[in-house]
Image (cartoon, rainbow, N blue to C red):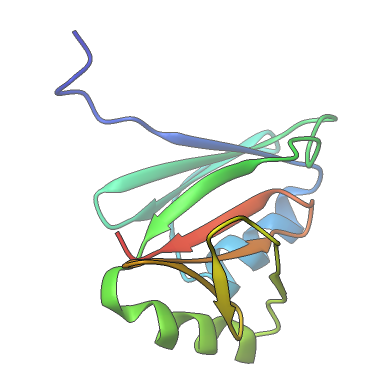
Length: 125
């Protein structure tokens, strides 16, 4: 039924102006649409992300959004660090960490938070 339909990510934030600086300015997503003071839609590759205003922003304690960045993960982590992004470090079974990148076999991941505390992840596939 939904196998050929494109999912759209959704993130709750408290302040759309602060979120815009982060998602457009820091992460480099393209602002596609501003729905007034309640929501913005961004595009990254073929996917869209709706960032909407909510009193529940940042209350999720798990990863809210993943970016599949492939082999560019090291370069992107470095570039985001230069833009002021702080990466999260987690102790997980069977994972080691090299700098800000967690590694388990061929899988690599780096987690960080947006200004509201939503957890985002870069992954190599």
